[in-house]
Image (cartoon, one colour):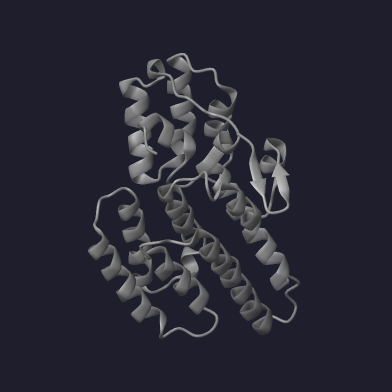
Length: 236
């Protein structure tokens, strides 16, 4: 299935090359599940984990991930958000965007586009602070924001894969106890360094799908909600 942005259609080749997470989020708005959108928002926060110092803010992200997998209820999620919002009030203008992003992941109706924007804003603020204290530093706020948006685009590709354009199926034959066990451990531990081992297990079971194998053996980045791991585990 072809995706469409506000500016028109995007081909799969353009999707693979795109470095603008905002355009991509607009494209998949009606295609990605709420779970995928929530996990993308959480992954954006984990990208800037070092800029989120308050444990309440980090706990909100963890709670949002748990809610995505129906491990906690709405009341627990709302409680995590309230605590995170209390925590973010004590931060200055440099830390506030990152803390706000973390708290926002715990909304019942998560807004991944807003959180992606906050993520790029957060690294821009941090860059501005570094530049202010290090006159010889050459990095510019706009440059680091572009780099962060490109990294977010890579994460979005990890979560969505090519399914915005065509149906991807995982043959039951491939889903051996070894493959499923590996995928489960990767998901639970965020142990994405084991993805090449998962590729070997899938290939041993008869999988020769180039997209699946290349994704597992690629450099990443990877995040919880990875389309291959989800496919093996049967997660929507």
